[in-house]
Length: 211
Length: 264
Image 1 (cartoon, rainbow over the protein chains, first blue to last red):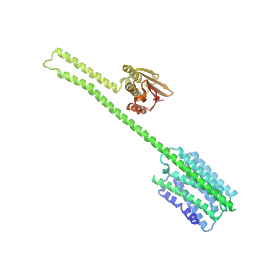
Image 2 (cartoon, each protein chain N blue to C red):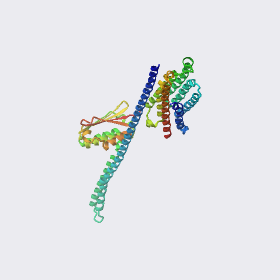
Image 3 (cartoon, chains in turn red, green):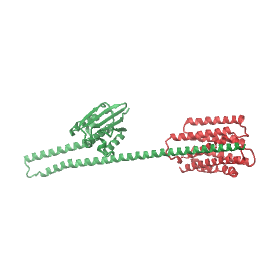
Image 4 (cartoon, each protein chain N blue to C red):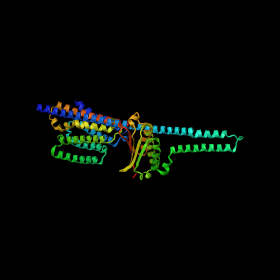
């Protein structure tokens, strides 16, 4: 289980990253934005893995990672949304989230504990963006099948991950008080969700190449 | 502490499982719905293309039928009259010609030539009614109302759009005239009717044309499938961006409402 959590999950980011790097310049702006998120997420995961292997506490990094993850995924949704209003909402929410994260770290959850409030809020925001995307898709006249549209796979991957992991983020400070084996099971499940997300994103990139 | 740990574990697992289940269901429904909509639209487009193809085929068939009819008219009437004229000329013998014979010959030739002129006039009028081009739709329609009663059908024309018709493009008036001609033909041929009513009137930016007869109706007269005449009419209407609506088919008589958007 430890091997799975430490290595398989962390390096699984290479699957979508490799798929996304092929003919990168020909990808749509949203696909490229998601690739930047993968780069960011993958780099942070590998750095955190090194910290863990050298017994260095990486919890403070999670506070910054949460902000970075929201900003990079906000950029992805910014590229995908088709109205100025939605784009403005993304910018306002992103700025507000950064301010809230600073307030949370300064006054509520210090750098040495998990930022459960902002991490859960981030998941909720991204879940809302995913639903906004599907709402947008329902309103426009489709010309290709659902499974042929790369963005559908990307957003499905994000929705599965953030909706599935929401409760885990919410209770992560309490989970640290559980037994080591229970924690491993839960973080293993989190890792499985992450791999599912990466695989769905890979499916999107493969579809984009086929176009 | 142990009991609390188990509960939290179950709560988190339950929450994760529930959320994933909801997401999967949502995605499956969304995917099915979008693909169904796409399929429906594709089928509709296919039907539309089929319909357009059938209209085009009808236009081509009508053209061919019209050519055959013109050919037949030329052969049977003009051709026969010219043959008779030739025979008359052949019969004239230069050795036995007398002033009396020549007078008869000349009268016979003139008669045949007049016959040919009338035939040619009929054919050309049939091809393109001169009154429509010279005096417009109203006059051509009036002509039609003069001709129809000869077939024993009473025709009532109520034209409240007389002022509008001269302003319409000749393409539009020709199409409308042809449609009325087709409708009248259908009534004479298939409806066993003794009365036709034609109403034309403007109504909030549209020209409404109502045609009805008191015949056996559409349901009793055909197989239910649109005939060539109807398809022809449909293609003419689509050409001028007009729409039509058939009256109730389960009752006796036939009626059709044609709606044409008047240019601003």
